[in-house]
Image (cartoon, rainbow over all chains, first blue to last red; front, side, top):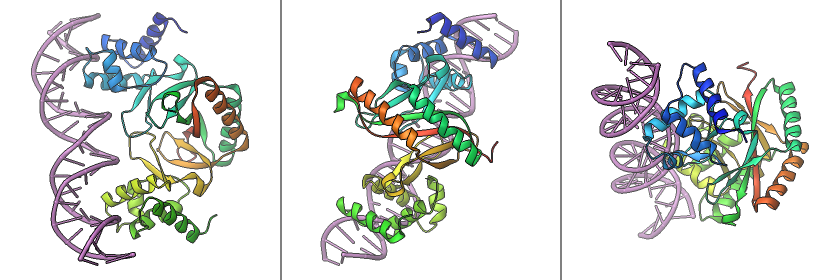
Length: 146
Length: 146
DNA sequence: CTCAGTGCAAAGGATTTGCATGCCG
DNA sequence: CGGCATGCAAATCCTTTGCACTGAG
């Protein structure tokens, strides 16, 4: 686990790269995401930082996403979910519960990474598609909903 | 490739299971999706069936999704995308172009399927998560946008 | 003093829904 | 005939945006 100050320093640097500052609100959003082991919805972020206005949260998430700090995930109908970029947290996949909508993180495994890389190489050769990264979701029922 | 009549028969059966009928509009939606080698947005479906009202298309897609005929895909901000259920078309993954938003189908490979199955088994053992299926997207740049 | 970030409230846009009509069984 | 799918238009709801204010440098 990366130390909290290191994380905020990195975030500040990436924001600075885009002529953006690390403000109180943005720090709050990042800390909320860093404290969670799963992607959070906007209401969840607001619940963790009740002082932050909804519109500011949305705006900050946009800025953080452009700075490469946050990643936005859209799965179903409800709210979008947000997590820290993978180079800050480590590469992982998601367990998506179709019953309650909850998403949990799942650390990546070597076997999958190798297979996916092979598939990506094949797609590149056959279709000229250049793969930047991948997303893998296991969809099913979580322990609570079973 | 499954014959067109077989497909519609199957669709009709699944709809009947939910006390729903295979109407002209629903047939049109299914044919539009079946004719494509990639998931379609609602505007694309409407373009293929100009006689169908937008609200009817949405309603039919909901019914078809509940009947297990159609699958809804949400990737980014724009429109959702729709494709036929995998048991009608075969299991596949997606190439997602971040530049133009286009999504192409990519046949599944044995290597990936084995690795994913292993990961699913691990998640089940460790977290009690029961995996029904999975989604794999390769995200990058398509040949046209390169 | 200046400018970016903030909060509030109003707007935007994909999707959903109410209601009257028409068609299929 | 009866009920369900359809069209149109109005409503929803997450998200974005306009605008005035405030705090940091």
